[in-house]
Image 1 (tube, helix red, strand yellow):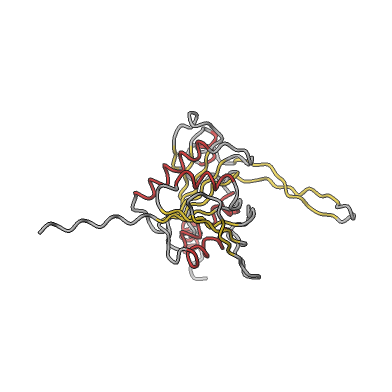
Image 2 (cartoon, one colour):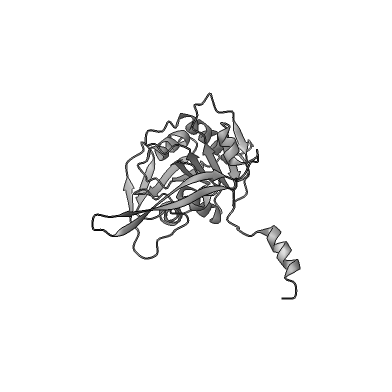
Length: 264
């Protein structure tokens, strides 16, 4: 008797989200980059949600509306945050965990300390909390007319690599693309997160009624001169890849406190 044919490998399910909104150029470029790598489903905010971090909506209802924005791709817009999008996607749209969650491509950097504030990365982290390997993509260009050509190429390479690898279910990668043409990019570099942040200032102004308000501004300062950081890689035209985690425990400090606080 002929040996039974092997079952065809099940098509990967790829959840795509972002924080710039479902109609942003970045997410359109991301869909184009990976849509033939599996069954792509988009669930993204209906408006920009930059800087929302890991916020969730608990004080008012969430709306989920199907939209026809990407040819041949199921897409939904959500009235909530990027994290809400991931939660609703798994529970109400997909009814199961996707094989991978891909967030972005964000308009603007999410290297160094930005990962803490980023809605793009919080969506990816939420997926990892739900045992879905994930990646967040960001391009160091805020312009609505940013060129995503090189970012598309490398996003596809990274997603292909993730889909073909046996990843830990809590894997989450923070990927940033430099502002550079495809020929200028030197490759991909696995990095650590730089110690760099914004030296912030609040500009004081008065509105037309005379009431004071504040506008956050600041200058980005890199305190980390290491050549193994995401900031260094991007400055030198590499795609930076930083593995991050949602366990915020400082294990070095924990070991020190266990000794120095013994008997307290």
